[in-house]
Image (tube, rainbow, N blue to C red; front, side, top):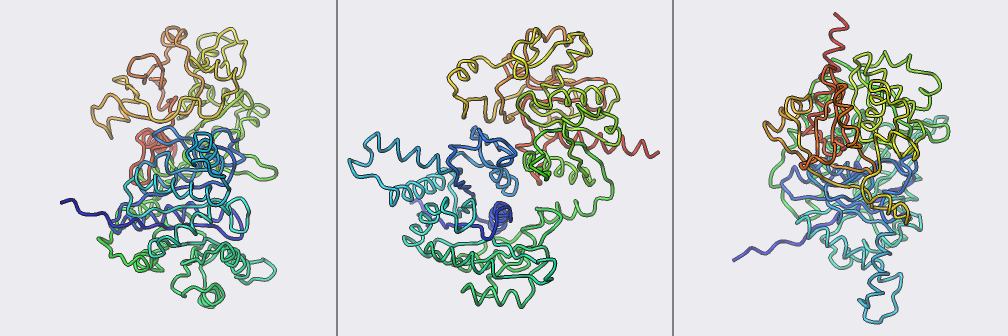
Length: 554
């Protein structure tokens, strides 16, 4: 007789005081800790915006768009969940206000509400609840950690809080609430202030929810007087106030949480026992990163850094983390510099010599493209390690076509629809979609097989992880591709096609064989890199950068 599965446990994570305090990393860390206790854990991200998914948003507006294996364009926190849990997260684990409303309206049109007057409450919270349970069923999770975007007190996430309240009312012993709140230390005052967090908790109370845990984010660790004050004013036990100071690496967060016994306290409230207690592999990875003595300097040439007077790197989170994962594997620390490709268009490439390697990541449109092409020309001519990702591969093809093959007007149709030599052109079927203005979710997305060409740098890198396996799965997000009409002339001049779709119709990767590392991939290897399982292409890139730096010193 099949043993009856115990009821799933739910942990809702909300934010207080301000955005960007680390709800996503907290959610991922809770999952990591509970997974280390022997439980099957997954995570859900709920975003309060009306967009159906993250795919149509400018990266500067909301950070990186992370693509799942099953082809969903999601918030960057889904990437954090995958990295911390070392597992794939499905499209069912991501929802937005737009996605929820779209579903409710479609059900109404289909008479699925049986003629009832469909109302914001209770039908929208019920849809949210049903979607959460569907994600649990798909992932077969014992514990589901659910991050609600935004901060408490905003009207945008009230319906999601209402759904969480419903679920707590239905099964109070199966639902916990965590609020991640910021404690400022005003420079002229010099004292950590708890009042903003007190107000945040009261706003949560006003939504009918009492937090079980308070994650106290601040520049420095929480001291005892502040811990007691939060406990008294926010109606929680002192041991349920968890200190979360600023740290050098996000991968230290689960270890820091465990200093306050966070994992044990969660299990205690759920009346569960730890099946095992082992964060050893995680701790070894963190320690290895800390102890690394060598350092390499990587230049990231992109265009989604600037927002007003500030420079943000959220647009390239997965790339940055993938390089760090490789650094930990190789045993060196990574120092980054963010280079606006528009600045290279104006000022040239003279400053690129100081970097041990250059990465040109994903991008869209014509702005800054000529700066990326100049960067790639510099890397090719000066034997500088170069890694081009998606758009970075396409720009490398254009550079080679122009400066090696003599096709001076070579370009991508994305930047110049009238180019006489479209070495990068729009994929079949995409023109029709663009004509109909069907932009959202219509590009090539998710995991697709890539056949690796034998004897290439690509094959050498993959062999260290996959052995003799000739086909690997990599994730994609693109509307334009390599134009096969130019394959022969480019190969004759020395460009190597190192990866294709199994039928050979889509060029997935290119390289230059007599270069220390010059690889471009149409796919996004950064999406599947994880701290405990780094991607082999990033590992090889960092190894080459480290080796060349060592030779320079000698």
